[in-house]
Length: 377
Image 1 (cartoon, rainbow, N blue to C red):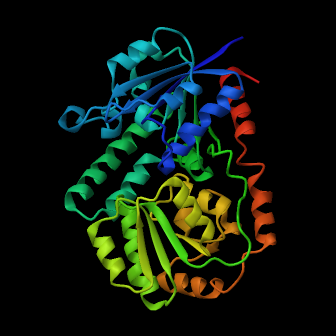
Image 2 (image 1 turned 135 degrees about the vertical axis):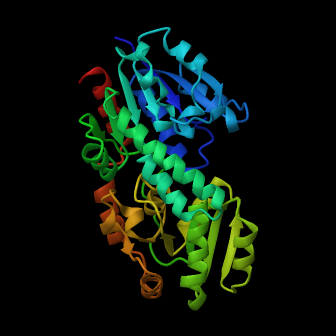
């Protein structure tokens, strides 16, 4: 029996230049190897098309995402209303293939009775209402705070409403799974680890690196807040080198970094440059303000870097606590950095990561599991 699957992606999943794209993209070759013929539907902002996707998909369709007032709704979250598209729904109704919706963003069809009889699956990338609540707390402008707060409120009602409308949900962390079970009474949810690049094969270097590193999309309020906090509250009293690397740092962040002799900014590094910085750092520092979802930069640092220092929010639901140094307050971060900056990263550290990673982050095994859930074992 041929296996055809519609996948609705919240964005164009290539190039893989931000954390959320990893699971979106690396799922495609893994499912293709299991004989799945993928019919990919992508929302884009700039009419971009990516021929690379044709290597893994039987068909690829692109749809414009609504912007501004055209996507405003009093009942639907903006991330959902902006992806409501008649052409997409019409294409999905041409056959009876199962449908995988990537993110709450793509779930509008769960409210359309024409799809009641279809197999419908939702890949949760976060408990979105919790994620937007954390964005509200970290936002620097009143407008953004109000927007994120409203979106969080709409998302909570929306997520609760659709929790019984899909054939199954798949969460990226055990914490997200438990939230859906306990808070939304979802009985059809399982944990499915994220798909990662095949090149991530525990490429950690032993010994000592030459700096501490914080990396992320610096245009995101929560990431900028973390970077500013590290400079002002942690490294201002540590005479140790800190590199902050990522996309589109603000003038405020650049100016603050330049005021500190031991801190530098690397703006918009290429993927190769970023991986090189992660590998050569001695401590990858990963504070977070959100407990939901999986932080791909955490997995990247654990697969490819030396010591990793994180807080509870970064590690929530991952089960990766034994692989990381833990801290919450600025004083605790300073203490851990001062202590471990002089300690070499060892083969024993790498062996422990290998023991925890190999049974979990296995694209082939997880694709087989997903195929079994969709078509039966």
